[in-house]
Image 1 (cartoon, rainbow, N blue to C red):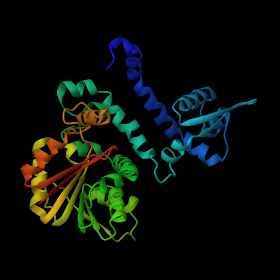
Image 2 (tube, rainbow, N blue to C red; image 1 turned 90 degrees about the horizontal axis):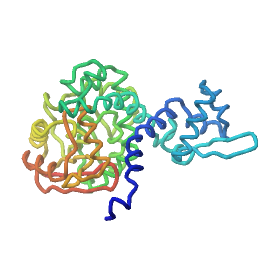
Image 3 (tube, rainbow, N blue to C red; image 1 turned 45 degrees about the vertical axis):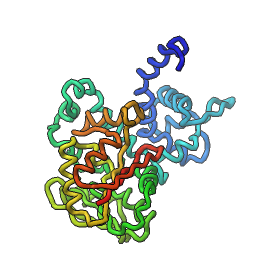
Length: 346
């Protein structure tokens, strides 16, 4: 490793301190519809044309477009009349609403909800609890009561999670061969994107989404077509209600919402309901064993602080929780992507 003189630390610090500017540029371009307009136009447009069609100031839009060029989300061609802007392949695939792999919904959730909680990160560190009370004026004692404080917010959250699984779901479901599990319960399965990936990858399986009654209702109305007969629903609260018997339980980004005691309670209930020879698949972003990284997971753990009761964990920590519940034959697979997989067997 080089000496401190080998690195431009002042420049690094300045880049870190202005990191939020990058995210807000991308969020704003998504919110205003810049990427959708440029995709639908079929041809590059000037900043004045984009501003006129989206109802913004010309000067503001020109600066926004140039910043997106700097982020490689847009490309610009200089002509005698001025710059003409078009989407890059990245923005066409991930930032336009019409793309099957669109991340628009999670961008809007980060911008309009998560970002406001992060404003109170220092308070969260001081107090060790989430910041819904300061950010939105509602009780922080029930994180999901706060997160689902209105049907609109519930819909935003579910749509955001669906967009994540549209690009990450297959990686975690293919981490292990799950083809011999035909009866699967997706606990807290929300809008069903992971369930759809599961029945696509394992066509002999059926998946039941187990979630709160209002979540199930919205999933049926907004996200899952009625002709998808391999996906069913079960209404319930997995902390307070019984969990039906199944061969495999998927807990995707569930345990990171809760402290160790609640994780132990939930996994004990899952173990009791699980058929002999069955198992549980945890889908989480795993920290290195010394917690030195990955940076994305460390930042996710900070987000758990401002939004939930939980944290991100190492593979060893999840293994300990699984073993305490009775699960054995624990396998860990680092996918090299955003989320990893841990499989425990009964």
